[in-house]
Image 1: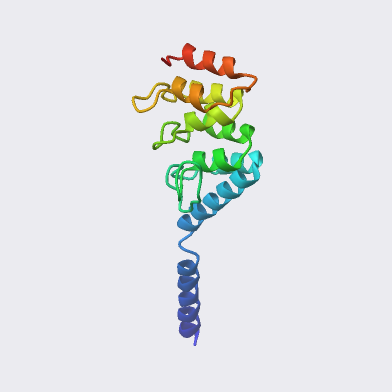
Image 2: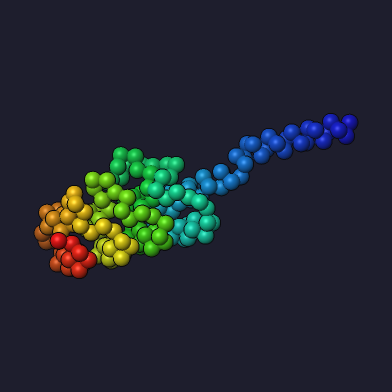
Length: 167
């Protein structure tokens, strides 16, 4: 009788462990979910909790994605943040060093931030090592052609780009 109860309890424990995904995988998934929710809500505290958890998250290939200005189904944390979050959140993500500021396609992070986001965010992106003058489409050309002519800080943006090697 004791053996039967022991066997049943052992089987229930095994089933419970299997159902929970062996813990580690489900912990990583919950951190990705927390990261996504933090991105959508511009929740800096949530972002810090994800960083503090020290999970081995791949910030360039999350298990979820959505349409961004860069790709149809984008799974990169920085692209999702640029599309959904405020500048403070994006700055925190870039300064963490956990994202690749150059993982762009035809439309790059630099182009989006240069034309549509704050000068402060542009400075942070440049300091993080974004490629200023790509061979495909130089940053100065993007600024000259795509920024609204009445943008107040257009000259400041030009100066940042020129000071950092744009031609």
